[in-house]
Image 1 (tube, rainbow, N blue to C red):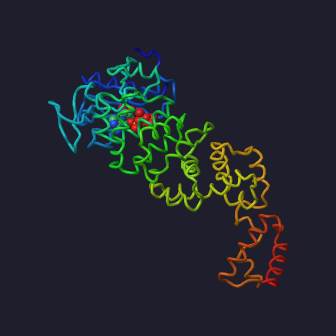
Image 2: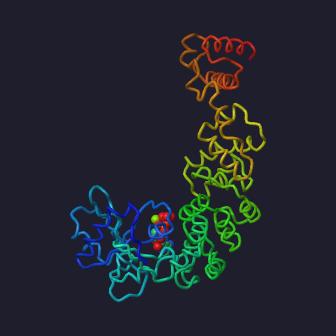
Image 3: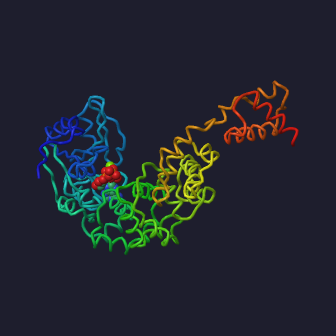
Length: 403
Ligand code: ATP
Ligand code: MG
């Protein structure tokens, strides 16, 4: 197969590959960018593989950066763009090799492609548009199949993360996992427990944000892979149920993890420990925790001003997207219109400040002041008090009498 017109993203990289070829080495675009080109999908970055060793690449180009030299990756800077160029490598047992830190550099493209995970990820593309397909990746692309390169059992044994990658590509591309590959996952699922949670997390998030999360989730259930994911070992029923949902339009990590939390029956409070187990960042956890109360309010068809105020605009969008997966969403425009009408969007918009109350002799510094401000905030949000200094001061005087 020859691709006549490469997508624009490849154009500026072509002279870089030409230069490597002119020096007598091989150079190819490899991995996801080739797959996505043939699928006509968006290409987010390009990977280049070469027979030249890192030192040889460095001698060919003026500006280079050692971004991952121990793995054979050098970044070449050309016209202000950086290209990561990785020497062909393999995992074991070859003649012509060097082996810094477990990586064996080789001169043969075939050896490099052989160590890749799936046939659709083992395609190479020459600068002139020629596609190298040693493992029938093109057929599998056409058939929409995720198939391990070589013996699935052995490949998952070598690297258990590949099992999570299989289910995430099934979702990402809306592909099916080929039978022997699926069996390989079922047989080796327990090996996933050897993999760092952070790496499982990356694949799980991509699965949830893919084109068809139900196929990925169903494969996780079918193969038992879910059992070896953090806090999912007894989630079979919940995941099975989630895989039946057919209105997925998730667009960020908060929505992805929030959806999983809701599917597991967690609330804002209990989701924290779950998300911690997945080693997610504090910021992400906070965002999920902020959105979940709104999800349940949307579900109950009773979204108060308080809820709108506390989850904020972004949190509200996230909540409604999560709710949509479960069929609970409300019209987004209505929710946003109500949010827009809130008297204040945050406490800084209050017409009085703590300092102002002290200066007026209404309050003294201390915990009581904080409490009073919280009370004012809530009263203003709920339109019980107008957000004007004199109204607020009057309300505070009255409140003090009542207390
Ligand atoms: P994405 O669009 O998500 O970036 P990708 O195919 O580029 O998809 P990467 O994780 O960026 O995926 O990996 C780049 C390439 O490296 C893959 O296409 C595959 O050929 C190879 N690869 C990555 N991880 C593995 C692995 N664990 N085992 C074997 N090959 C792998
Ligand atoms: Mg990639």
